[in-house]
Length: 418
Image 1 (cartoon, rainbow, N blue to C red):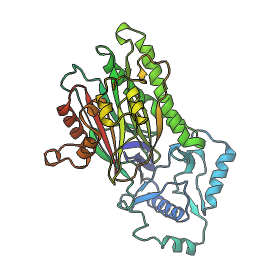
Image 2 (image 1 turned 30 degrees about the vertical axis):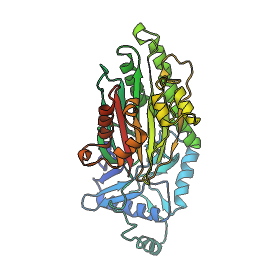
Image 3 (image 1 turned 60 degrees about the horizontal axis):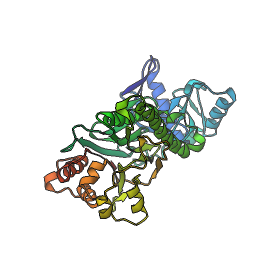
Image 4 (image 1 turned 45 degrees about the vertical axis):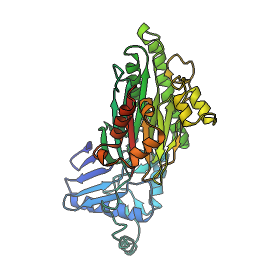
């Protein structure tokens, strides 16, 4: 856990799932713990949505677990601050410490919030308070089993193939919020909490080691640039996320172009990029090149979300080629768009993904497509067969693709929404 505060009165830690763990200690710790639990329960009953939600509490350890209300605010005008605490009083609670240190900004919905209610006072009549709190039931009271957030399960793997001397494919799986940043393991499962999750696949191109360098540079820029999304104005949140993706692609393109002009071995080096970003409860995607993004709905079937930025891909979207004809076309790997690679301008594809629990998202390089038809991807994810039940979904895709073709590097990331 990340330690956010450690004072004589309280220890505050933030878990990987985004939950806030606060342990009371010092003078009148029991009294302050009891009061904050009572106030948060009352505010939830009153429908106040700009305070932390109480998820669990332990009277023996004097610990509460709440939702994350965002990052602390550094500056705010006195009038704005007063109006926020006045708004709290319309829900029947007067904060005992109405200062900037107890105001946060929740980036996922652009809302200023109020935290720390150990000295707060409920203004309602005592009989009404007890009547409201007594309406708690096992299904609505704070309990960890009920309050579990949605989860993601993922797996990723890459293989050099049977012909190429080096692997120019790279994949990335990360989680981050305003406080923390973590690289995820090749396979895992996690509650999402208030974290952003990013999954990406990039395929490099260029002479000698230039392609390998280009894809690595592309992935490294994701970790550097995407956390800037916390600066996005709350006024146009969804549009701001898409704009952030476009800015990311253009920044990588510019950097690869400059690097490609800096030394002879990097001439026309470039990379493709397919990326899925879960932020604020919504999945967004960005794409350029011929790596792919698929969605496999829980109900069945497979849908290619990304557009192959090739002339052959364009012909197929027009209905002039079917999948078999596109796979056999002699110019199927000639890219019309990529990051760097001598392109003057780029127009990345960005948008939102409509996914529900039980749906799966697949990102893969063209080495997987070379060895697997769309139907084969669908079958390996849903019905792997006894021989592959011990393998992760990504391993099943890559191993089969290399066995069937193996002429290129093969990389896959599979994400399941639980």
